[in-house]
Length: 113
Length: 113
Image (cartoon, rainbow over all chains, first blue to last red; front, side):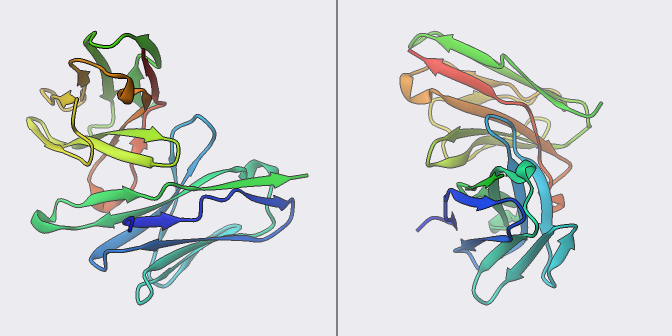
């Protein structure tokens, strides 16, 4: 089982739609969580951190369920510019407390006019 | 401008010809890391460095070397490249993993014939 798993998609949605991505992680010792966005052939960039209480940034809402070990990202009122791959990232603190960022393989979103 | 700079951005080489991909950051970050990204496999960590003269293996270190003689530079060395090292490579840096945000370079697309 992969440490961080995402449905690769692609998710094809019309403009204005609401779309949700889920991500599951296998290690219960994971301590912090993030969503990154990667445009085609470009570098990943941090979209938002995911806090235990859930957090919102404009049209984007991230939630964490520690008991079930999953993270979600909700995008409301999708725009054409939201088309990208969304990477779920988990920070796992192992022995030595050095930490390690583990990336999911990404979920591709295509927003169509 | 705060940035991570990789060179070369594109390279086609032949099996066995040693090459170095340079990475430099101007943000005084302590943590630096190299990833490779392959279709269906996502981002996989090759090597990372917590600080000057401190490096450690990631998940796929075979066939690669790194060094961290200065804080700003973290070159990736392929002593004898093979076709299975054809990939998209990203260098990234951060103040520390607890902060969560990794700043990525634009990527280096390497083809080994």
